[in-house]
Each structure stands twice: as structure tokens, then as C-alpha cells.
Image (cartoon, rainbow, N blue to C red; front, side, top):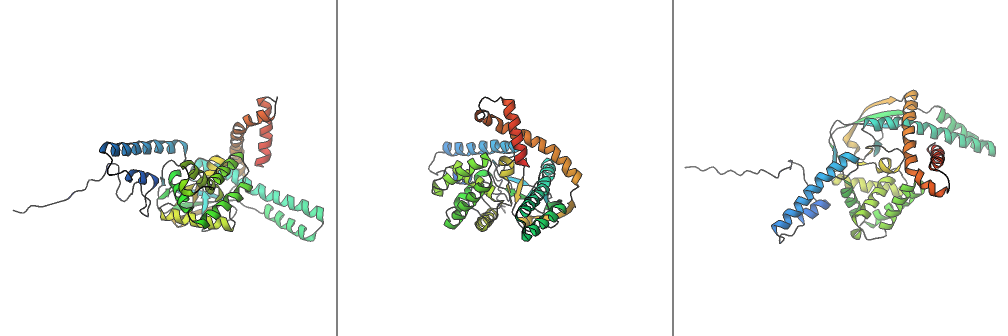
Length: 355
């Protein structure tokens, strides 16, 4: 008689083949993985089950929080074939980490707000140069002013659409901050991050940005291995905000950061500046650093009338959000002024700032 011996592996409920739960792509454990698999074998079954059940509940809750708020409480994915939209003044797609959106409301918002910002900024640069040239009488200043005026008058705004060629993975705040903290053990990387945050603190002056940068600077005075979870997140988010700047030290920090994220299996990040800290208040703005995971789909010149229409819509919405966030703070500063008077004052200041 022949007895057939077969071994079946049914796996773990909720597990998908090829997906490592609680592990990065390079096989190292995430913070949740270290907690899960770090449970001592000498612990009782009840203790191990309680730990794992607690983690499962946390996963469910954080997934729901991510879906509701748009923030990164868990790792998320963008499916293959997702279309990104990007606003810029060139027809060319440069092979560098880029900022883009995939939600229609965000894409419309950037068409209006950022499209208008690009042309307004160019016009402001030309006006300043012309004022300088008139005051100095210098031929060199006059040439610079003419060059900037020609640039402003001939500027065109384009919308590039890019399609993902594979599924993109975006890290949770916990995992991104864990990766950042581990990199900070490298003294050169830490030095570059400190310099990046200092430079961004000088350039990005909104109160909420300043608070974040200060929190990160305080945390960076500590040994990375002794940072609390909230301190690690503060450093990561401050670094996230600094990714828009590109001096020599910032580029060095970004190259190492992006490289490590790729090793861990990630392709993109949530753009926390435009999500929470800038005046854009976007739903899911992204920073895509794995440029090999996308291909250029189309390039179209933006219709100035559409830009103006989107600007009128979203700038009004933006101003109302800015007023709501800042009016109460001005009540104390303006003494006996009423809330409505403070609101009017803030609106005036906000209009001036956004222009």
C-alpha cells in the first residue's frame, strides 16, 4: 500500500502571498514588527495573544483614520495605472523626485492656485527688477529687468499627466519616521538634515511650520535611539517639508533618504507641507521619488481662462480656511477689536500674503 504524504500550508488569516506584514522590503522589521516578533517566547500564551490582538485592532483603527483624514497612519498603496497631474512652466518631464496630485479636486486646485502663483511670481520678479533698474540707472540692471519682463510676458503653464507603471507604496508616519531615525545614526546624514531644517525654517515662515521646525530641532539634540515616537515623527515631517529645497546639503540628505526608502520598498511620500502646513490644504498631495515607476502620459498647455476660474474658486476657499485658523489668535493681539474686525484684518493680511 502506498501512502501519499502531503503538506498543506493555509497561511494566516488576512495574509496575502508575497506581502510581508510588519516587514520592510529588505526583510528588516517595522516598529510594529519589532513589537510583534519581539514578544518573549517565555511570555504566556495569553500575553502573546493579547499583544497580537491589540496590534490587529490598532491596524484596523489606523486604516480607518487614514481613509477619513488622508494622513498616513498606515502604509498605503496607489494602484498601477493611477494618473498623476503636475503643474509647471516647462513641457519637459525631468527625471527627479516630483510633486503631483492624483485626486481630481487637488488637481483642479493646483491648476488654479499654483498655475496663478507661477505667473504672478514671474510678474512680481519683473516689477522688482524694473524698480531696481529705474532707481540705479544701471545698464546691467536694465538688461536683467528686460530679461525678467520677457520671461513673465511669455510664460506658459503646462499640466503634465503621468501614469504609474506599477503599484506604488507610501509609508506610514510611524515607518517613515523609523527609517529617518535609523538614518540619523549616520553623522553625515544627521548634519545634512540639521542644515536642511535650518534652511527651511528661514524660508518657510508660517506659524505652524515654525512650530514643527522647532520641535524637530529640539529632538535632533538627542541621541536618535532615545527619541520618543512623537519626536521621530516631528523630525520626519520637518524633513518632509524641507524636500522642496535644494541646496548642496539638502540634496545630499534627500538622496540618502530616498535611497533608503526605496530599499524598504517605498516609492512615494505624502506631501505634508501642502496637506497640513501650507495654505493649499490639499487632500492627498504626493512626492514621487521613484521616477522609474511612472511614465509621461501627456503634456497640455493650461488655458488661462481655466486657470483664472479655478483660482477664483479655490482661492476663496483657501482664504476662508486661513481666516478660520488665524482669526482667534489676532483677537488677543488687537485688544478691544471685535471678532468681525479681526476677521477683516486677517483677510486683508492673508490676501496680501497669498499674493
